[in-house]
Length: 208
Image (cartoon, rainbow, N blue to C red; front, side):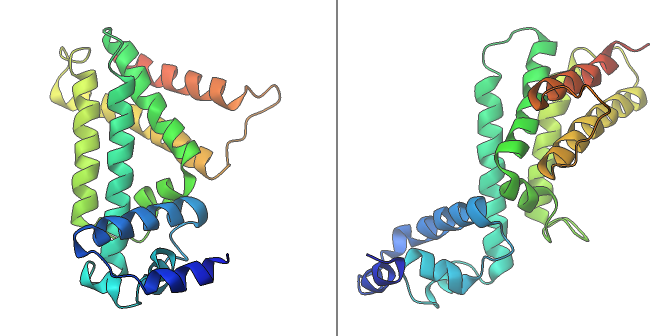
């Protein structure tokens, strides 16, 4: 059965308002993961779910509002994975390594979602307030991870270390997402290179 025929059949079924919003977000997340956010429209989403073209507007005023919800779902997924990976290590540097390494892994495994979260119209020219809140949550998590090792530094020096550490990690994740990583001959495997980038970033903790 073709997807168009399936959609026509689904349109004939009543929509349950209580769960339609969740279905729309789930379908939008699947679409973004598969094709990227650029081609996602409210009409296309309605076709994906099998409802009328007007149905999504009962839950999202416009496409931007929908994309914000999809991006926030991406942040929730990323943060949940970070928490899951950080359960085991008790040594602060080991936890920090896992946190930063997970961020890079998320970018590589979810390139389209990562683009929506960090490079789309939701962050340019200004951050959407909801996205800014998610970014702030991520920064607070990172700040908590490095809190103990950097407790002896002034607020200024601590901020500089954290910003540099984050810039190295985010820059590598961004370039990995774009397949732009280039090194001289004898380039390490991508996972090995990511491990070493994070380890070098964490060494900023020990600088005097």
